[in-house]
Amino acid sequence: MGYTVLVHLMNADPILAEVERLPEPQDQVLICTNVRLRDGKEVHYIDPEAVQVIIPWHRISFVEVLSSREEAEIISFVRER
View 1 (cartoon, rainbow, N blue to C red):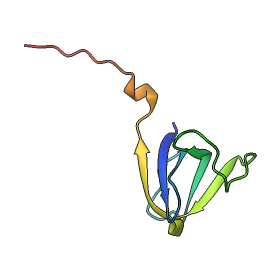
View 2: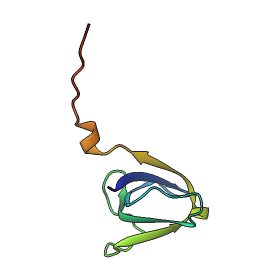
View 3: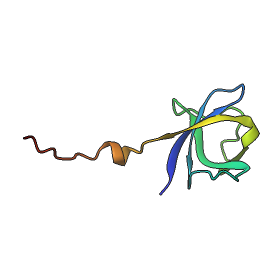
């Protein structure tokens, strides 16, 4: 199961990407696929043919993990008393 993340880079606009697993404390890099801007456009400094992007942690301010669309579409039944 992959995760959609919003990566906030130092001195750059945030980018959306997918990661296969959440990073561990000992990780030195974040390996991302399907990198794009928040509005879905291409990131101008990443080649459009790139399959994966490896971002070193010293360039990342913080990472937001977004909920997947499948989780958002789950409808649960609530029993009222």
